[in-house]
Length: 287
Image (cartoon, rainbow, N blue to C red; front, side, top):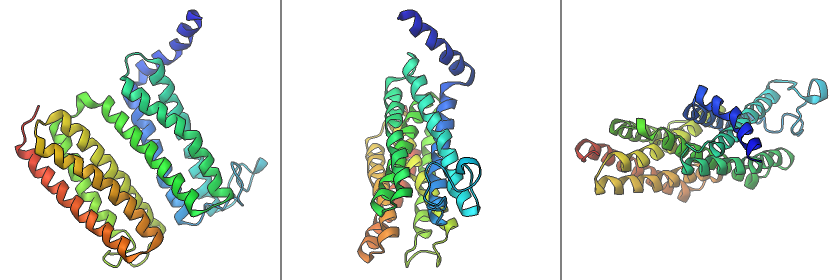
């Protein structure tokens, strides 16, 4: 039994030693983010059902494995990248589980992402076979949860390289993402008149940038600064970022004046919190 365990571990350890687990995790995170944005593109272009509601097949080629036209290609390519993202998630989880040198918190996060992956696959199938807004929303938020888990795991793995300047930069990224998120939304106060597929893709890109920025800032701030006021600002910004991401999506889907007002108010509060946190990093005591 021990011989089999030792032999099976030999394959992963040279792989991790050659490419590095942090790089494997970063590549997996990039694939997860790409899958989310490609899914947004497929939805925004109306391509979600373009494969004639086939899943996992499409509508052309041998056994209907390939797309027949451009709309089908959007959906097919989303599934194609999602397949590699799923393999990368599983590979990261197995590598973390098999390597005793990897932080157990990281292992728990990536294994949790692996557990959610088949659920996400089933939800992806249901968006094709049923396509209800509830299923679509659950599919999106499950993907965002996986993305957030891998952001946290990646920050933990790269924690030794994280400096105080990176915290300020992450706060700056969040501060840029907030107005972009609002400006690209279909609100009366926004700068757009047509919520086009490109606009939707950019807005959801801003969502991922916002979540990644606030996670990096919140985690790095606690490691690199010894300042209670900054810690409080980072905690508030984390909560507000989640509220803005949620209300922003709800505002797009429901077109409620009350919801729009709450969304804009939360975005302004978050922007102010980011600004205050950036100023505080200039004077706070570093560790």
